[in-house]
Image (cartoon, rainbow, N blue to C red; front, side):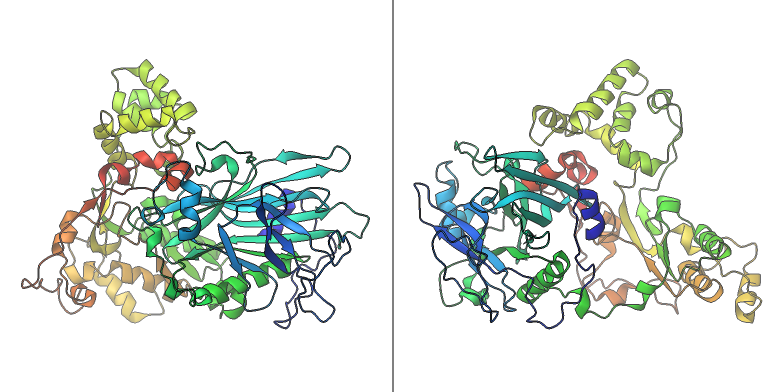
Length: 603
């Protein structure tokens, strides 16, 4: 993925082995050790990240002569970092990378004092200046190109590319493509030196990884997206690098960081720190990625890298997910037909994922004919309801609201939404107007739209599969007399005719058919962590007790679920309205008027 993205970005990894093995843990010859250095020269002192020459025996050395531009002299990678904001330590591996820590109690008050900011103990997010790529004659870096993975919506990430160049003739830097996107979660940078050295020796790569530390998550963004200095007049360029640190919970403040949980600084006693960024510099981008993620895994102890994991057998099998074929209209017959056709085409699915559409949800989906106005607005065609709900999310809700009364006005409003509101930045005037309308005069019709045209207003109504999957019967099989007998006894019977237990075995029957007759090894079912898109229904919440989950599952030897323990109080349903963080709203402003934001989620 990284190589393909780099190719799109125009990177040219000249003569670099594509998939090298790192070898021994101390094989760091391709890495350039770096340090956080405070520059005390000049009127405006700042910090920087610069390389440390590595001696012949492989150890880092910080001794160098001032003004020495030999290969052993330090080279600045990132400059203009804010003082007193960052502290650092090196990874245990000795790779030469650097972990950057943010100390709220040392820096936050100083940063926000000019803007009248809150005390650091009362804040849950902050934007911090990381600095600028050192593209100038002194650093000898003439060209920077970057490949980023950034969050595009709540659910999706995507690649972004950009860079900057420096001309030794004009002594000026020029922005030639894009700024770092909001909520960047991965950054690979190519640093090209302006020299007569070989292609390999004049190119360095820098890996920058934002980290998750406890309740706080860091991400990168450009200077144009920061809200840290709204009143301060600075010379921050739009393409300067900033780090956003956020708990995404207004009640989780920086004061929750406990120093005793930070082994590196456990002797400090008072300093509260957050691990925010990891940076590694080297000449081989593939080794850089592998070692960088290994260092982070060793530091955070929250995940392992692929080379240290046992790859599951399903990774080598072809799998099929039902979503693109059926969306939420999936049926057991459709699943069987899909697998059968793949087999007939010579492609054997070994893993099947039954995606959205098998759960018991409420309210039930109702098919509505499009009004004349809707047909006109949608071009006269019948679009897939799920696809339309994603691509024309609120355009159709406007049509449903205005209906047949103001056809011309509805077209104007729909066009206004599509052209202006949908792409408007958070808290802009169009965004504010629409947020107000959606929470007042449009709210009722928006609910009707969500209920009738999408799945996003529905809630989980039961733990058993829905009626489509409950009544599925085992298919005939000449190789299995028992299955054949079961199928013959069920001919002509519907889900309503057969007993409760037999009816509830439909999903099990489907899995048996896929595994026994169609060569499938494993079947997985999708579901939302909180039940369904809008959580659980009040009905379901009122039937759940605090007894163990296993006690409320269907008993295969009875025709119904076990009776509820009346001595224990039922779980009270609660439709909670989320309080989105401002950062998330800036990433995807339209979530201000989605179904969960307007009508709550059942928890």
